[in-house]
Length: 121
View 1 (cartoon, rainbow, N blue to C red):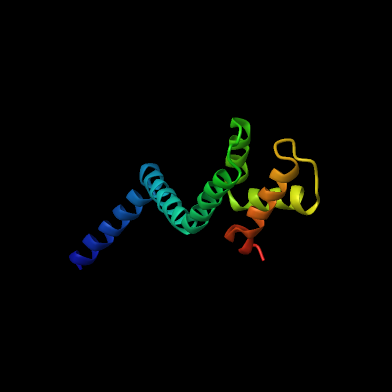
View 2 (spheres, helix red, strand yellow; view 1 turned 90 degrees about the horizontal axis):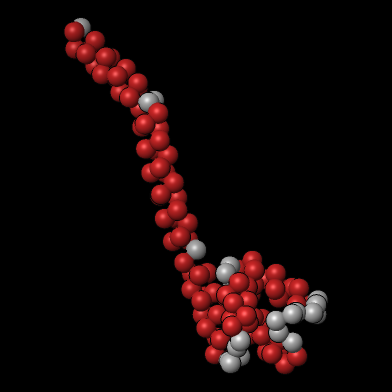
């Protein structure tokens, strides 16, 4: 019977400790770190494809001016940006202040052929 009270007391103390703000903060921090790690692992293939697309654009459209290079970095930041760029400036033929004429046509072709756009279908 004494053993039961000791075990019950230990369980109560454990519950009180686990419900403390510090432990809750610690668990929240651990959960946040693990979720960031899992998210980065899940996005690794897309990031590699985006980096490859950025390199291909820089090579095939060189020489690029600094503002054009910055713009390429912006549109290849994530898959949604690439798809938004393609929809706006390639499919809808909107005026792009950074690329025009042949360079824009080549950029649209490169983006269309990229695996990033193939995943969208």
